[in-house]
Amino acid sequence: MKECKNHVELIGYLGSDADVKTTATGKKLARLNVATSELYQNSQGEWVEATEWHQVVAWARLAEKAEKDFLKGAKVVVEGKLVHRSYTDANGVQKYITEVNATSLNLAADPAKTEAKA
Image (cartoon, rainbow, N blue to C red; front, side, top):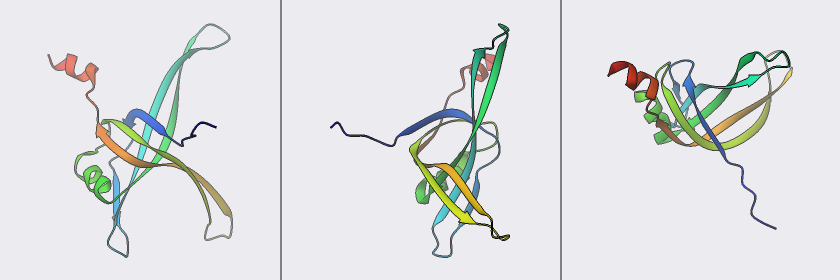
């Protein structure tokens, strides 16, 4: 059997500045909201843009990088793996979360903005 991998790559835009916190043990944690979009033609032949929001978590040096450079509207490239977890909220309700645990974070050049400046 070939090796199976849990690998995610997202190229999208930040919906807000990176939310960075320091844990009780002194480790940095960044949470990012990344929007990706795709165009498709619906059954009436109209072009529709569908946007998906992805929750991304970055730790340690990646969190420090996000804290300095990752601001709302920036185009980013995220690599990582999907993680599914659950917790019980203050009302005793079980909540389920799917997020990307980042292994690489980079700012991407945005050709549209580069061309607009020229």
